Image (tube, rainbow, N blue to C red; front, side, top):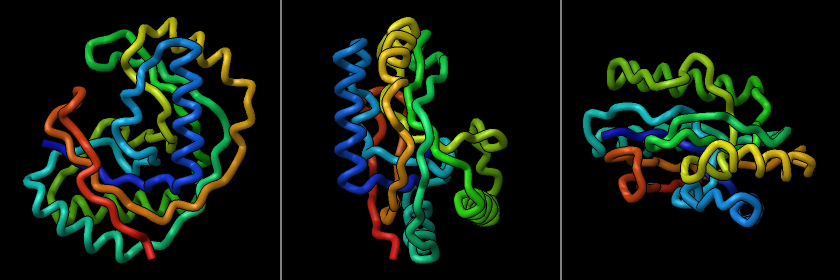
Length: 186
């Protein structure tokens, strides 16, 4: 089993992202897999956990130690990837790497390792902050089509994130993960 923590989009940003996901679906039939979770900016890719109870306890203390954070988004981005066995892609809006985001991630990584041992996850060293719009349910050629169609829109905006989510994964396949818990950042 795996988990991760993510900064959750507010209602306005969630609605914006869903409209963009629908445009992606209408343009290239990418599906709605990314809509299974609340739209978010992850602090880390999913990592192995000893058990859900101990991670939830840490989540409850971590959320009390952080402040709301403003994230500046910059542009539409496309990553080629093999997802769920498909030669596919990830369509996302790139977030600007800031000192505040870097510090929050650094604290999160250090506390995880201190409390739970090695919690390495893919891309710990090269993580690009982003908000995923669509992934994995269509061939990469469809992602190219959607990206080329939608890249001309303005993705330069800011949003305040004042909720944290605890995502739980039994596996990375449809129906095997969900947002287990949400908490306000105050």
